[in-house]
Length: 191
Ligand code: SF4
Ligand code: SF4
Image (cartoon, rainbow, N blue to C red):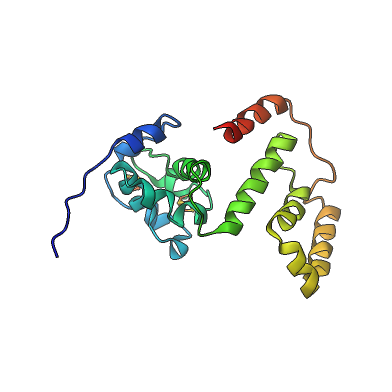
């Protein structure tokens, strides 16, 4: 079977870099990012492959891959990269682009957690952990499942213990630039 030569399309990279810069073009495929990533076992493309395919304009493959949703944003890759490619930030940008373009996620629960997380920050100006999980349970439908299995009792108990030990704040902490943060996050709805 004859193989078609790949036609690189650099518009995809230009579009992404305009939201960056992420310096993806500086990648020389050393794979230090992938070798340090703690969640490659759950990825369908390795981080260095995401970078390479992004450079070559493989838009559908990159926006539809599981890797961008599995990425835990731990920044290990960004720290290890000898060329200062902002890999973790690029993964976030790809997630947002996939949402904006309506690309279905193979990881719908992670997508729901992602949206709940951003809504939480938009509302409070910074993460207010105490309401994050309950909001996620409601959004994802996990509350019903937890109710049925009775596991909610255990998890509420753990939550109360964490509140007692001040691992969670009882009230949200005030943030000075709340209005500006809201404006930034509200933009993602208008795109
Ligand atoms: S560590 Fe940097 S240069 Fe090396 S493969 Fe990853 S992105 Fe490319
Ligand atoms: S930020 Fe994502 S891709 Fe980079 S090392 Fe962490 S989990 Fe892996």
